[in-house]
Length: 401
Ligand code: SF4
Ligand code: SF4
Image (cartoon, rainbow, N blue to C red):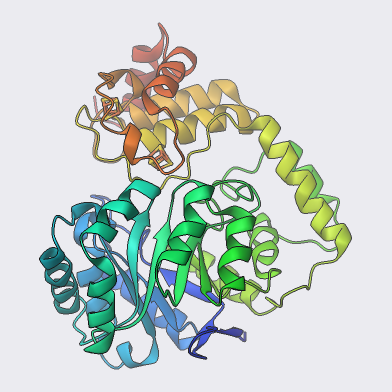
């Protein structure tokens, strides 16, 4: 397998088209990072040619950065471009910015961050952090060598994207992009805008948190399967992104060895403009089919979490989408009870009717989902009078009663 490389426009860095995202690392049964397995996975990917590793302050409850610092020991740090992010929502002053960056250098056991991003910008967050002096912070951190390149990751509305691009001399940006998000957030217009202004573009959520590959609905599978060239759904989704010459790196969270192998194999053929018009048309048909089937556009990013009432918001939405994407409503209603009712994992109930409608989660959702309202629909469609019975059956099945 040969991972391909693309040039970062501003500095000529040759970056692997596939980056290792450390937001969804391999975990143990209690939810903590499986250090041994995840370290092996990161190092194997680097040994195969991946040279971009991305983490952030809040990933895995704050444990991702210290993990990455340890995983990149034994000479691996020097072989990668390390990316992490300033947690913009935790910044209250200009001094906080240096405090976080210095703490991140400690956590990551390094003296510099190659690609440093202001994390998860939306219009109002940008206005606030710009007012606190983030431009001066980035200038100085570059000048004193603590960061090599300055960028931002974006989850806001399309109209805010271009004004943030224009507001500072950025080296790169990171956007959510996949064939279901062409019109969402920065979207295709943002991708083209940033590239035209000389920014490298890193892509996150290429598989929409796995939703484009985990439960492929039969109607979608049919369209993929009719293609003369057989590809997995992941390969179609990734190749569609790499087809765009504006894309520099695609981040994939790879907690399973099989996913790493598959993504590396796909990255082997990741040339721009390599899909035919007929293939692009096929992706368009799949996109239309998904829109017919999906109920809620949750990517599973978890920015809305934790919920003070204990609702597992992304999991509620995942099961709710599955109700419409997978042709097995009874099985799905049972899965909802099993996964959200406390029968598996840590055993805590996390279902939608625990929501007390406090509204705290709403502003945190980059997809602008009206979370409490959709949760009410989830309750109507996936709970109902036999819900407790389903939970009890599931607990028996998982031997918790
Ligand atoms: S509105 Fe509901 S889901 Fe959102 S934080 Fe409050 S209790 Fe949790
Ligand atoms: S509801 Fe919104 S914030 Fe929460 S996981 Fe889904 S997309 Fe992310």
